[in-house]
Image (spheres, rainbow, N blue to C red):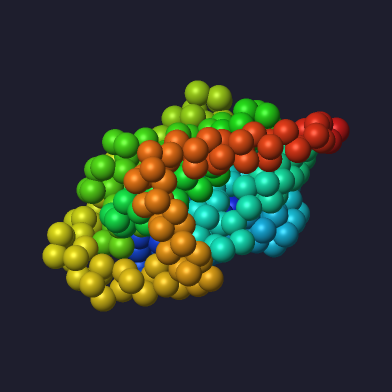
Length: 285
């Protein structure tokens, strides 16, 4: 009997940033993999996620390598980095994710997806800067929700306020889960897989082996690294973000902020309407 293979695709969250073990990142996907199969027959696991990856990278670089491994399960968690670029286009994000999801399910593999909180909220940016990023992340999440249903994915809602507000789940950078956060994320994914009969091993425990970062450590990271992180991730976005913030202030003063939300909703609807190709059928064994 061939080994069951689980392949994880995505960005730094799936790469395990925030959960250091023996000088490397472990992360939720590795924790999940350990609990999918029975102890006597663990699954084969490959993590192809890369720091900074966007939907383009997942489609063109990670997915072909994943499919070559003939996986039984593929997780795809990506999109935050797309929102941090000047070239953000929800139609392009939707088209890429639709192609990735279709390629995975078309090979007969189970698909695991998740929506995520916006980075502006996690960093505690001022409202005028936070709201444009939040609107973009909501758009990506809406696309992920719709396409997950379209392709029959197991979908984890991980943008809820309780998840964001619990600081014990997050690392010092406020953007990636700490060990406890990765464990909780993995346990929630395990519950989805178990309910679908795809995980028969023990779920990951919630309690971390290492202590969470202290408040002083979080403040130190923000003072020494946080601004640099935003600058690196928002390379070409910063000038545009200032313009978006100015627009937020203007619409707020005019009482027309709802128009920005409505415009974003129309963009999501158009992006999904433009996807006319039906999901691929699984190939015959």
